Image (tube, rainbow, N blue to C red; front, side, top):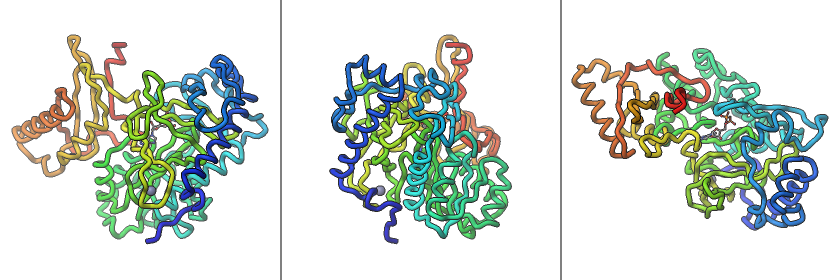
Length: 437
Ligand code: ADP
Ligand code: ZN
């Protein structure tokens, strides 16, 4: 099938052209925030940078960073760069990591958002003939409205189911003929399991693709979802602070997400020193909005850890790609001095033939960190003897030890016993935090 683009001239523009857009738009945005947002004026003055000093993207690193704390301090509207009469929508982060933050959008901001969501939908092969089933939550969370807006833009039929009521999700998949499912990957798993439990053959459903994001997920989990639902599963990345879903979007190659560079400049930095890293190195992702009117944050520190690549992509898009973020720096667990991401554990579990239904418990006993992983047995293991189960636990423990470099206690639990998620899954319970350790 020939590749289709929502905005071909932009998505396949030359690198020089993209650079030129970025430079022009950065210059304009910096002036806009300097003139209209007190915090930016103050920070830039302190750093001795004037808007005139920013002439092209080469000058980006002269600008100070913006942190999540700045948004919290400015709660709710302190960083808005336009008057209230121009703000047509508010959203707020889902508050996964603390006090929620609020962002606003002008008409034009929403139009840009719809366009980038439309790019994602075209990239997964959708157009006006499709039914876009949106099971991200609708509300202050950006998930639902993001993909919904994209569906409207391309003239597809949006089905705004929102999250929850999983049985009904499945009925709608069957009866309404959904062709593209949009939700978190953990919810996609749950929906897929429910489809199977109802005895529905996914091959008979018209569903062909899924757009899954808003939380970390591994390649192993991607394969499980693709198999469960008999679809192609695509990754999508975004965050409230920058726009919502579709800041970057995956294409047919499925090897990372193209960043919408005509609207956002991406950098990776060393999170300790703030130094900008070359493409290909792991670092914290930093975004600068260059077309937004209401909340054009400059050098926003996402705390997400990832890699940027500029390799030629077989889909023809010329935007750089970012890897699946391995998680937020906040998600990283330090266990007995070793850094561990839940996604590393997930990779091991799936490689060993388990599902992505697991939960991690971290605690401190006698001044030593403990790591316990609960994972569901497969149906066929359920009838195994206690000795067999113990042996399987030991096998997983050995594999985790060799991959993570630290020991973990594995407990195999009954199929279906780990709580399913309809939004962002909570994978880790860190009891050390509860006792302030
Ligand atoms: P909250 O910070 O309250 O969860 P958001 O909904 O804005 O609010 O979440 C954005 C965050 O979700 C990102 O910073 C990132 O950590 C995570 N995220 C979004 N998309 C992905 C993805 N495709 N892969 C991994 N993590 C993602
Ligand atoms: Zn591509």
